[in-house]
Image 1 (cartoon, rainbow, N blue to C red):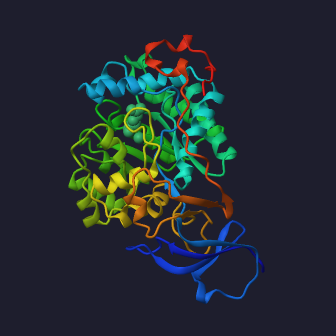
Image 2: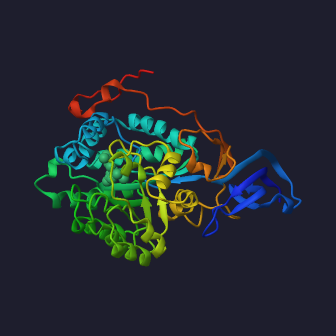
Length: 435
Ligand code: DI6
Ligand code: FE
């Protein structure tokens, strides 16, 4: 057999050990058919030909990063809400007054498929630029059947268009749309019924998520959706215990959810339930930082009970306008006290587990998907250390080299810039570009 590609002159952090980086200095890696066919110390490299040989000049190589929790498809942004929060109005108050998530829902309902794809593509480019090779994208800013489907279609299009793998999550229970204010049960029925059915029929759903919180949905409402989803064999996630202890961690565990996410207010009993169920704790320091929270997730208890911790950006226009996975790693260390190796494992091995993909990716080993990030650093802990550095040199996705796109901010679109200030119906479907 001739390998497709051989990488030489590199150091590896495989993340394949339960603790530690899984370091192999002076290593080599071979790919075949998009998978890792061999890896180890260069001195032990078998005599085998490769179609292409790439010298990485002493760079460090890690698994491609996995951003396992994002809401990166949406229209408009919420900069005016950012300003109001800085004046002291809380996230929950803004939501209660019809702003917050609902402001983005109005903008997203008024946006066409192409506009959603374009905005998502630019945001996703920022993630690739920092080493992401797999990303999860949630719906949840449509909250009606057509708009939820449009968001999920946009996510699928991005997955086909870009080299990155996209996993979709249906988040119909994100906020209660005002048209159902008097009949919550009818909305839950719509989500668990028509919306989920149609999204499944189009092949748009890899997982199901919900927002369990005082400002969102109750345990009973989430349970109704989860029972339906579980009966359909769908993996579950849950936004849990972000603003208060709503018993979300234990609820997620009781359904055997892949992950419970946020978890600032999770109790020891919740942690224990997650440990027993094998549910991953997804930590989202960008939301903690943006909302200036002070209550930290129970990291020490997760360690003690052996709950795997993942780290993600939670990219969204309200609580985490964070387009930098490396900044999320830094925040996980500085704000939550993770060790750098825990943070990086949280965006590789444990993130893969939160997406049900641990067999396939998230660590480097023979047979794993050849998704690798090549970094210009002298030690992998530097991925957590620098803020605002641009250390990525190259990606390999399914064995193919991908030159990361230039770092770009989302170009301003005047008509969509302040969506909450104008009714959705009057928004042009395609706003004029101004670059
Ligand atoms: N938790 C979050 O962090 C996002 N959704 C959620 O349930 C925030 C969504 C937003 O504010 O737009
Ligand atoms: Fe979220």
